Length: 561
Image (cartoon, rainbow, N blue to C red):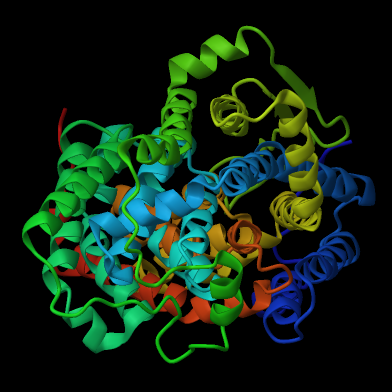
């Protein structure tokens, strides 16, 4: 039996919007203010979503249950699979002591914590975003930063803030490709438009990142390095996105940024070396003392590791980089899928829920097919790289199994939380609650460039994915912009650019960060810390889009390929 989504069950958009927002409010309040454990807060939001979807928006209970089940499956595979295997690799490097050597080698580039943060959280993280996306960069950079002795809140929160500007071109351009598919707009035009928005923020975010960590004065002390890091990312990001396409934007920009920063640090050093690993003004109350004791950090870092030790320390991460990039290449994915891929339709949900106008131009069914492509999942590439690295580090097969079991136990609650979060996100999507919220944003008239951008931010905050947000709201952005006489390419691009700033507050990313840093049940602390940064940056993106719409219309001109 088919079911058409209902967006205004009360005959009052204000009241319908209020009810549609309840599940998200329940989860965020539980997580951020009532100090609930993440899986408890997520479950409370899921229950609220189920009740509202079934009893107020008229969704059949069976379909609501299937939508939640579909989301939970997607949460475990591929996202939980990525987190589990990244933490496994991290556990291996800690067990054999190579992480200490890694810490010394990074300190050999620079002992300044601010510069380490630029190198790892922004530039190195952007490479993993470009190659894999879907939680990989936060898991990798947060694990590296915690291993270097950064406080848990600094490692978690700053990894989340850094993982913004690259997100729209993550996983070899997947969000842009999905946006073009759902809107019917030209892929290269969308890539170019996003590439005229995000480079401004690729320049701003490194400054913002260091300000959040070390304060205004601490930021100004290293402004030349920040400028080099930002410009050498922003310029390639603009050029590749406008004159090549969305596929290699982050990979090229990240490599140029990393190499440029390392070379610059050979000829420039800050006057003072920043050694604190805690957030400015939060020393001692953000877990900094606990982690320093746990990591046994030697502040002087005066032991110079041998070349052989350096190679051994970097080898696991080099192997990880190669495998993550290889697994991100479409040809590699296709080859692996040729060996095994299972597509499992959720009978009773698949093509039986219809999105209807005004959210889409014409009614169309929502697919619900779980793709079990275990071989080509990014997490599997990470798993293979971890096993190879583990064997090269001297672990026996039995030793690897033992550490893997320990890792699985360590992240069990995090995996459950991710599954529940995605169950909530998928139920929100299939019930049409998110579309009701989107329609409310669409009533803002001349302010739509700002609020349409914030719609993308909301989409990522709800789903945890810029790709999912583009699929969710891309059609609505196109329809609304055409009705208001705005460029549909501009507003579809704004959905993706605004969405990147929602990445740091989506519950899935926060759980990934807390898991990678071992800061269990502190998700609420992380959320409260990053929320201001997220909304402030999203509003700035919205202001830029508003200027593009009304003041700089020449920037909307499409490139004719």
